[in-house]
Every structure is written in C-alpha cells, then in structure tokens.
Amino acid sequence: MEFNGKETHKVITLENSEEEPEINYRGWKSMPFIIGNETFEKLGAIGTLSNLLIYLTTVFNMKSITAATIVNVSMAPPTLVLWLGLYL
Image 1 (cartoon, helix red, strand yellow):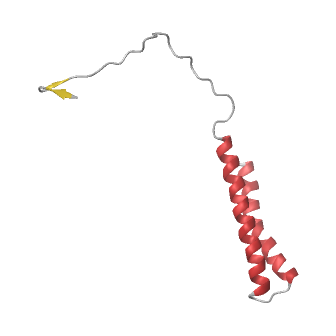
Image 2 (spheres, one colour; image 1 turned 90 degrees about the horizontal axis):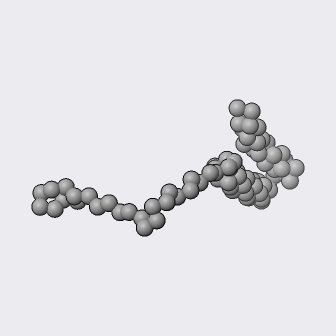
Image 3 (cartoon, helix red, strand yellow; image 1 turned 90 degrees about the vertical axis):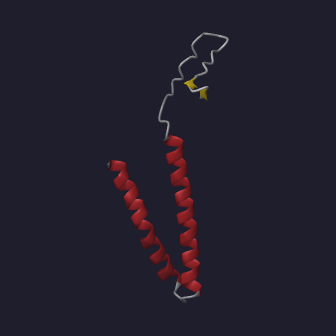
C-alpha cells in the first residue's frame, strides 16, 4: 500500500506466538477425487449404453441380442484402457 509516496506494509501478529502444528497428511491426497471420477464416469457410461440399447431396439428395429452385443462391444474400450492404466 502506498501512503504519501512511501511504501507501507502492515504486519499482523497473532496474540499467541506459538507456532501452529504442522498438518501431516497420511495416504494419498487425491484418492477420493480419483474414486469419484471413476464412479461418475461409470454411471455416465452405463446410462448412455442403456439408452443406446433401447434406441437400437426401438428405432433401428434390431433384435435384442444383436443390440446387446453392440453395447457390450462398445463397453470394451473404456474397460481395456482402465486396465492398461492400471499397469502403467
């Protein structure tokens, strides 16, 4: 802050001059975010694929077994990428 052309700084001191204890995090800090991301990704994928199954059977007039096969084949790449990421 500037006052009459001079730089001034305020120093705020605490009443208790004791140092705050250092927080020691144990475990992985980002694990809840990873689990949450994977959970919502799976929920979105399952919802989309169930809608795709209904769309294939009603609009395209496919047999249920053919539509289920297409849905299962479309579920394979995300699962394989997940396993690939596990080993990397």
